[in-house]
Length: 564
Image (cartoon, rainbow, N blue to C red; front, side, top):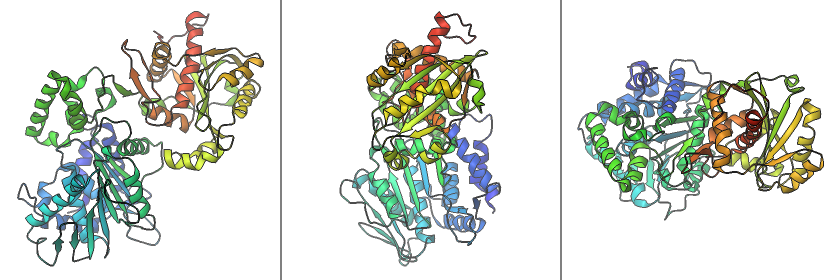
């Protein structure tokens, strides 16, 4: 059997069907990217038919411990895609070395979708096929969770007569050894084991939503010298705002949206699309269940069981958080947190503006002067022929560039070369540089600055200097009651294609990071604390649009977009 005849390929094809709404958009994006590889359309990667044949044969030798059938028959469709993509997709190279393409696999999926079981299948396959003396580990918040993988591996081996023979695997209390390859698997616990120096050919981070980033990064550090390496990161959503899974999901989304260049990451993110997160649709819309539970799509009894739990969560609020997090992959904390604007919609508004466009324009400036060692942003906005036009710049401390690049997974050198970001100061932002940048805008772009809007925090000294140069500065209170209208206007303009921004990858990343919260009066605004990364550019832009909106509402200009 060839790859194109496999359940992996057919599932990926089904995922990308235009009228298929049971699959969330990021799974669709990953399926499309992998199909391009499988179809020979990718310059960097290919699917190895020989590797697929080997994996297929080994799966036939395994027995599913619960279904008592060959593993290749018992696996779920999404598991087929995960296994074939991760183990059979190879890196094209001039030396013809056998190197797996994907270094990281991220699986965000709800409870009872067999995520640990499918990871066990992958680990058995790795132990049988990876080079001699390979080492494999699982990490988790505690030893009991870490051993879930060990338990699953043991069940499969004991249920499979050919694997259970004495000369194939040795099942010990604290580890599992493959005697054919002299490889070993050891479960580790974050609470008990130091992770450094383990040299992991592959590792599983189980329930990553309950851990910080240390175990994952320690495992990755151990892999630096390896050509063939793999980190599998799996979890449901967790209600806390600080965990390793949030970062991994965020990076995966940026990769799939084309905001980060890290194609050697394979991600299946089974979480409901943003348009399903409004108006409590989880209570009535079955698509919320289907998009977060791929097993429910193919097994009606699973779908019905989740529906029963949904009913209880609707009736009893004390059951709501657990249901939404664990069975819908939705964070629940009372007031809702939702994405601001889908990045694909934002990108439809991107243009390459000639600098001469700005000559003679009346503009409004928005500032986000953050802490001295963090990002600062300046936004310039104007109205032209019924549309809002914007240009935005970021500023970072020079000596923090490398640290920020690694921590945020953002290529700041690239952004600096593109002219959308400036490094100024050493350990802290040089506010003098930012101030001079603003003071030179009129001369450099031929604009007429009407007002400069700012958040009082960290801005007093800068505002005094700007006012000393005869600019009118307006304090904009960073509160939902004030920011709701410009936040809403910007979103409407994007969706109605009445917004234009000068091409800016950094701004796009900020839009992707932005999260909105809603106050008790249903006023929405971009909340820095709830957002998944830097949003200073979006905040500065909203400040600029606030001033523009005030002029459009109370001035003489006629603007076609609804602003209330």
